[in-house]
Structure formats: structure tokens, C-alpha cells
Length: 254
Length: 247
Image (tube, rainbow over all chains, first blue to last red; front, side, top):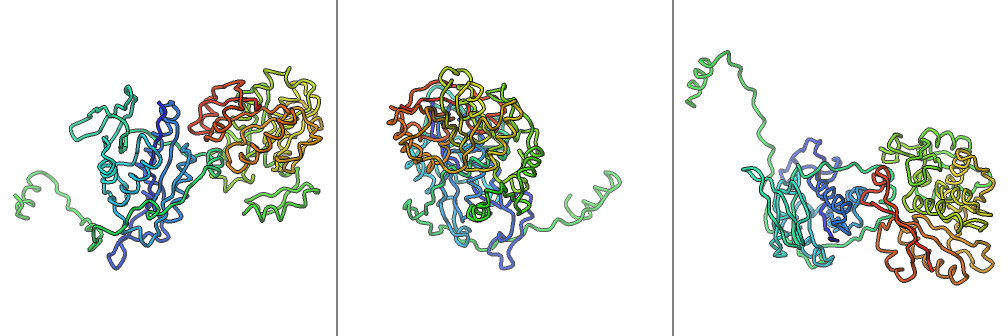
């Protein structure tokens, strides 16, 4: 097996950063905030590299859509073991209007152009929590999909993927080409160490725009308002069950 | 610090001064040696355990850094790249090919292939690396292996594309130089000229990209080595390294 794998790596606000809503409620503050790679995409890249190490994959291409700084995210992916990067340049000002719909069109086009056998993306990005891109890529390409993967194995000419579902685990066999989205337990990504970072500087990154791929970025949705989640109010302590029932009755909930 | 600034500072090469990023200053050979000693360890955990080398390894903090806090500026020379490892292993195992020959080691880095050539009784060895720090670590690595450092001629001007007429070398070693497409392109043109002059060219490379497959008809495979686990960690995604002769 010598699969060509296309992997997404989205640049998002770092998971440790406290996100703040802009005063005009048009979105969240991103300027001057630490960004890093979406953790689910990191898992996707790790899996692709492991597939390369097992000789299942021959080439790993990573894609990131966004402003110039996305190239740093791509460099991290290259240091983890990906072979080359594609940066789809979308200015920071336009980025908040870009939806999974558009990203999925871009990925579908790149998957075809690069003759990818497998597309791997995170099950969701931790900024928008949309959980749509992978499914939409599969729909655009009319390829089978395995979402929320926790295990990927070779199975004849295809792949066997274990999925995390509400009731437990589901195992499905996939024909290639296919789209896979990663869940948290698929693997534990490696750190990019200095020797890998140094050699990754020489790996190629191709820069393109959505227009180059014939993808129109006109928004399909309109964001009306972005609000902070309600601040959690302080609770009350009760001594025993009877006091609890009393309080609940007082509040009129039982 | 951009390479242009670096080049502007470095022409004082005659005085053997070296640039460090964190100190933003120029240091002498002796200081560079203490930095190298502080940031590396002597390692034999690689494909040529008979050669001891000062290397950045998982036991040294620099390994885990992004390089910005290191006192060494992009220390390519403090790693034993897989292509060089395979090539050095091949040289040690096939000393009859090297014995009494005049050898040029392009992109010598830590100097392992040059040291291996001396161990295989080459009559003359030239280490070539445009990174002048590499020549300091080569000197240190020679000492570790009880080799007279003067036995290896050290050249820091770029010899890739050097005139092939009156070219004094019999054998050219190219270890792990195909990681950069622009260097690779230059090398391929030069290798073609060298081979026409009857020079023997050995390549060691872990195939980080497709470049070598474009040379398919001209490469004859000489050896394939599985990379030890620590070397695989240093080179995510790579499992083997190969040696070819270019003809």
C-alpha cells in the first residue's frame, strides 16, 4: 500500500487561551492571541505519519487555510513528519466569514488535484466546533467517510476504521479513496523536536488562493451575534436531603 | 537573524570567529567548543557505533527546544543525519573501495563520513561544509576517535559546482544533501559532470522526497540500512536509509 494522504491542519486560538468576545459582538478577539494547531488535526497528522512509518502511506501533504501565519502551523506539521505543505491564503479579515462549506470545497479540489487516496481532518476544530468539514468533503467528492476514528488499520485493498459512537465502538470497512475524521483517542501526537524542525524548514510549501482552485468564498450564512456564555452563578450548600427538598420546593421546581 | 546579516558578520573568517544567536555576538573557536560540549553528548547510538560523535540527542535539552534558546546557530553539524549514517556504515564495511583513494566529503556536517574514510585508509580526505562551525565539531570528533585532525583537509567554500577539470579527487561522498530542492538541482548537474570525468560518486540518502527517483536509471543501489529507533525519532516518518552509486 502506498497511499497519498491529504491532511488538514487548522490554525486556531490555543486551547489554553481564555477566549474573549469582541465588544461589537461580531466575533471573538484573535489579534495578539496565541494560536496553535487544532489538536484534532495534530492527531490526524500523527496518524498519517504512523501510516507512513508502517509503509501504508507514501506521501503526506498538509493543508492549512488562512493568513500568512498558517505557514508556521504547516511547518509544525512538516516537522512532525509530513512531506509537503499547501497554504491556501485567506486574509485574516476574511477568515471569520469562511465556513466549513468553503473549506470542504477547497479540500475536495485539492484531493482531486493531488490524487489523494485518503483525506484526514480533525472531527472538529476547537474554535468553531462545527464538526462539518470532513462530512462535507466526503459529500463533495462522493467518497465514503469514517468520522470520529479511534483506530485505523489496513484491510485488504481498503481500510478498517473503528469509530467512537454514543453506544460504544463501531467498526467499518472502507473502500478507497476515503475521508476520515479523527477523534481524541486515535493516538497521542509526538512533539516536533529540534532536528525535525531544522529539516522541516527545507520542505516545500506551495501557496495558493481559493480563487486559484475555482472556489467562491461568498458566505452562505450570516453571523447575527456572538455572545459570551452566561456567567455561572454561585450555588448554595445544603446540610442534608430534607433541606435540599425544602429548597427545591421553595424554588418551585419539585 | 537572517543569513544575510550572518554573512555580513562572518567574513572575518581568517580570525576564526563564530556567530551565536542568543548572545548576538561573535565568539572564538575555544568558546564555540565549550558551547558544543555543553549542548551535546558523546554518542555511539547510531549506525556506526565505532565512531564516537558529539551530538544533540534526547539526553540533551537542546533536542527538545525550538532552537531559539540554543547557543548554537542552527546546529546542522550536531546531528548525525541518516544519509550520512548509511554512507559512513557503507564506507567502513567496504574499505577496499576507499583505500588509497582521494576522497571529497560534500556537506560533511559532523564529519562522520570523513572520519570513516580515514578509518578505511583513504590516502587523502577533504571535508567540505559551508558551515564553518562544522569544521570545529569535526576537529572535536577527530580527537574523540584518536584521529589526527590535520589528516582531514577542511574547506568551507562551496565546492558544489567546482570545476571538474583537474579535479583531484577519486571519490565524492554526498550524504543527506537532497533535503533541499535547490541544492539537489545543483548537485545533480554537477554529479553528471563529475561522472563524465570518471569520478566515483556515492550517495547516502533516506529519501525525504521524490528527487532521487528522477535519477532512477543512473543510480545503482549498494546498501539499505534500517534506522535505529533514536534516529527514527530524529527523522519523523523515515525508517530506512540507502546508499547508491551514481553512474
